[in-house]
Image 1 (cartoon, rainbow, N blue to C red):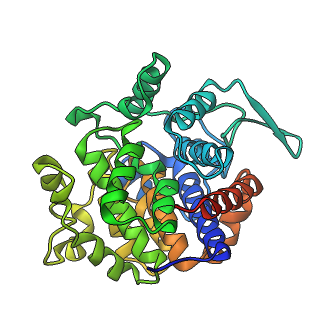
Image 2: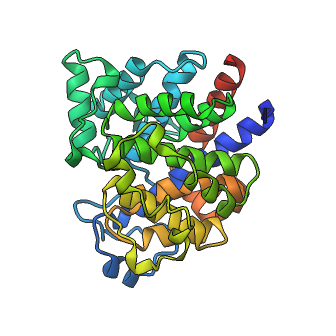
Length: 340
């Protein structure tokens, strides 16, 4: 069985976390803007002008995508490599309450946040967190209706994917764990299958495949083993056995917050570029849910190309970079030492 050593695990987790956080932060200033508006801005770095609908944010600020990812990672660290879904949900509540504050280099941040307050929570994640606060078991909190298939579980699935990969879980055990990890906020088959496709794509990249090879392996898996017709239909273009998705045009990709659309935008951005920078900018330029789509593309892109290929200005401007790097190291150590 293929196996990573501890050092390699740390490098990959760190690259992935930085990659998704930078993608998130590049996309934050232009979130909710349509594709044409975003493309006309010619985004190449963090934007500091208040172009985002709502309010402006300091350059390098990451949103709920990264915040919920690190909240989950911190729970696993505190539980010494074990995944405790109730602890993870409690950390989500701690993050969104904004009551716990941390000071770094003289700056005040809300816990698990890039600012002094949390921001960006999606309505489906919020509904799931409310259900948990009411006493619903964590893995039953995610709504299961078709309209509850936003991208909120896919955006934060990276640490759970890495857990499965590091421990060499087979497809059945991976589907079970990833399904539960999604279901704490998004319980529908379409959300769970999107997280599984992402995990298998990331697995191929971690194991040394090219992005195209990893995608083809992930696309060829028989997902009918775990998911019903509605989910299989939603992802039929991504899992086309003829490889047709590789030839779709950019015009066929949507930047919406629907989990299927976000996964397609991220995969397209990975398949049609040859650098971390270009993958992120391609994802952002689809518009609308720019931060999440770039976040989803960001982890596999950084794992494949290496953290050192993330543009220096992007890394330098990323808020709480040291915190993210330290947490990544702690998380990698925790899951590596736990074993299976």
